[in-house]
Amino acid sequence: MKELIHRLQPDCFDEIMALVALFRPGPLQSGMVDDFIDRKHGRARVEYPHPDLEPILKPTYGVILYQEQVMQIAQVLANYTLGAADLLRRAMGKKKPEEMAQQRAIFTEGATARGVNESTATSIFDLMEKFAGYGFNKSHSAAYALIAYQTAWLKAHYPAAFMAAVLSSDMDNTDKVVIFINECKHMKLDVLPPSINRSFYQFTAIDERTIIFGLGAIKGVGEAAIQGIVQEREAGGDYHDLFSVCERLDTRKVNRRVIEALIKSGALDDWQVERAMLFESLDKALQVSVRFHQNQSSGQTDLFSLLDDTVTSESYVTCNPWSEKKRLEGEKETLGFYLTGHPAGAYSKELSGYTTPIAKLNSSMSKKATICGLISGIRRVMTKRGKKLAIIGLEDATGRQDVVAFSELFEAQEAHLVTGQILIVEGELGQDDYTGGVKMTALSLYSMIDARSRFAKCLSIRISAADQALLPALQSVFRAHPGDCVVQLRYSNTTAKASLNLAAKWRVSPSDELLTVLTELLDQQRVEVCY
Image (cartoon, rainbow, N blue to C red; front, side):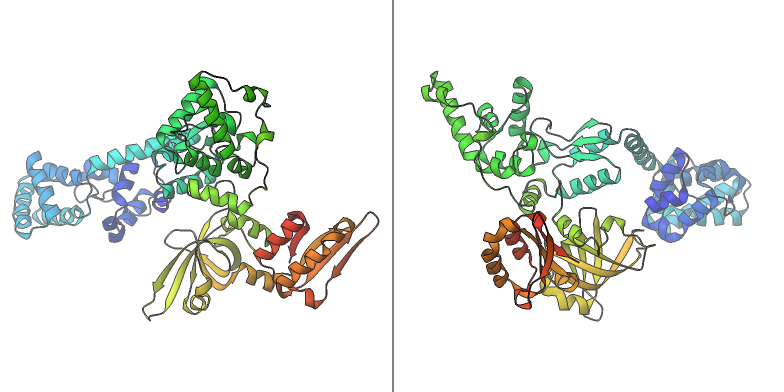
């Protein structure tokens, strides 16, 4: 449809109506669409089968596009009544030979009675019969075109409000929400994560370029719970921490499962407390809530609770923060997609010197490109020769790309192609004639560890004099992950810096497991795969 709009360049409402009628298999396959467009732009001559038909066919450049035009032609040219013209329209739609023969005779007789040449009348009837098979009801086209025009106007002039409404209308359908979120990105609109202090049930436009996520789109959080959250917030003000949430809300409606979903989705990030701490502190917060409500219902005050310090952020259970992978998995579980990042993001950054972000692929660039992404789905197809090929859906933080892997390559790598895994693809680019976008055909497929083994120069670790006690632990880690990748120590102290490549016996396999252990032992900034 976008391609058709681009070709037609509609400049009036009639042509928006025409788009609806033209964008169907019959007109598209018959050449009728090309005739319409060429006549609109003056590349083909507009002709009318009879001068009396110009007022009827002028809005469609001489093309019989609508069923109503068939009826009008019969009325004007052959003296049909409106009822008889409708019978003609129905007969042409049904294509019954005996009915068509009868109608041909009636039409020819009526037209010749008005002075139309019999051969001209017959050819016009044949033309009507041909186009009647493609004809669309103009009143339907008008209704659809009006909605299309109204929504396009709203999208152009009130983009955030429009997209918030569109997101809210399909918030139960995760696949559609993902499509609409991507459209927001394309429109340069910011979609903020859900917030217990700012979000409502539906998606909401908070300014001309910003939408905040609706609590109703969080899986596991029901409408009754959201109503309770919003009503209490409007009555008593913002929630200040996890403990105030549990104290102020009815935990029969906003129960543990609901609060866990809110934490994982990021809806409780307002207080700048790690999601892991919120999650681990939930038992404590619920216990405080139970005690608070028991005291309230009995009309008694707990003497010892008066002596307790006020609940603050220090009351949270101390624990290590979630890894980015676990945090994003929580978002995927509760929102249906990754909102604040993408699992492929860290890998794409690591391979930034070798890979191209998916959003930057285009068919006019170099014929070859390398991309890194998460496998979002695999469709296996059997060719006519009985060989397998795969269409692999890859996504990174910037977009999504389908990659075709032909039989030999696919079969060689099939065991490693699993949804949810990171994949690096070297491939050829071309124009996708169906979508108008980019198509990619795989030349090589690599898992992340294969890519590191093939392209990495070394595993670099920065240490200082203060890390001397960690050396035995590092030796144990290296021994547990043997491989072919060189380990380089970058040592620094107050007076000197030095780099040292360790001996071959300390070479490692640069797996995610190894990198995780090393970043836990040191920290992420001091461990780097160099390419």
